[in-house]
Image (cartoon, rainbow, N blue to C red):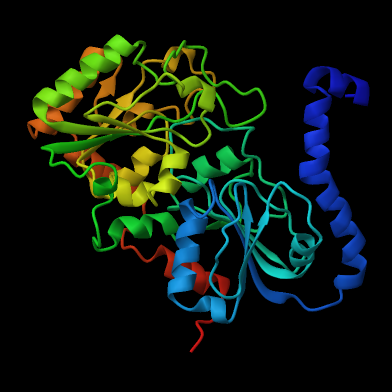
Amino acid sequence: MSIIGYLRKNGVKHALDVIYQYKIDLFLQKLMLPFLKKKPLKDVILIESHDDFDCNGGAFYDYLIAGGYHRKYKIVWLLKHKIPKKLPPNVEAFHLYKPGIKKDYYICRAKYFLADNVVTNKVRKEQLSFYLCHGAFGLKNCVGMLNLPESVDYIASSSKNYDPILSVQVGRAYPNQSMIHTGYPFHDVIFQEHVENEVKKISDKEYRKTIIWMPTFRKGGGFRRNDSVDEQPLGLPLIKSREMLQALQDYLEKENVLMIIKIHPKQDPSTIKDLESLENIKVVTGLTMKELNLNNYRMIRDADALISDYSSIAYSFLLLNRPIGFVLSDLSSYKLGLVVENPDEFIVGPKIYTFEDFISFCSDVVNGRDAFEAKRKKVIDWLYEDCDGNSCARLAEFMGLERPK
């Protein structure tokens, strides 16, 4: 495509954003590299995560800090949002999408690159690049959207069984030598002992049950991206009006159930402007998560049930072997489709197509009805090699990190 054609299709603003967010850094790295490539790599770990300090990168960072690794290894965060004013010793942070000379210096000297979502290409062959993924297995077909650069050396996978599916998702030929089975760092959070109940940060009332609904994004996640042609006035699948939302509230209030609707951080904020919290329905956004110091995996750990759809969060919650409902109401209009040919083998809970189905699932949770426990256990055994909360330790060992004495 010619420059003129690109500008006509995407606009001048988008072109300037690409130059500012990506191209200037690449230019600076090319300028620096001739002077730095003969210098030894430094004990520097670069980390990027899905929404800053979260996901796999965030869980592994917490492990490194708790273990004192930052006394030996400098940790450099590449952030999408505001840089914290205070960080632990030997930890620095830079804007991922803003050019910076010091940031590019670290890119030229770091030994390790860790990414959940946006991969920063390594610039020297001897550097090691790890893609940790920003979710476990999910039904969503992301072929063509997650193509990893050749600079990525290792890709975190949950098991050899999952390797062929993950390879397709990230654009790698299978078999390959990239897959490592250390487990996902964020799953360690699920196995941690309860220090405090995460749900209590959202509401301190006592409820019979807590159900978390975590729909994947439909509109958002990239330039002019919209993954579903289904009309969603409130930014949610299935719930088409405030009247339906109120009907859900009435049911939950009657049964004394709390429902937390966790909005995907990539969902276009304009689509949820009319979605409001009610007495028994609490809407949680990416901003809320940071304001209340919430963590997705601590939150689902403290829930009685999960409602999902094509998202990978269902297969993280799966490790708890608690009820999961799958909202598939927009499947026929969902542009991406599913990544597996046999989805029924992986849908380990009721399929929810209507509001009545939604209420029926909630009723089953309230009344302790669960017909899918054995099927969930079967998928756990197939999908995960380890279910022990030691993924961070295995990753650190694979990287060859030395714990400071």
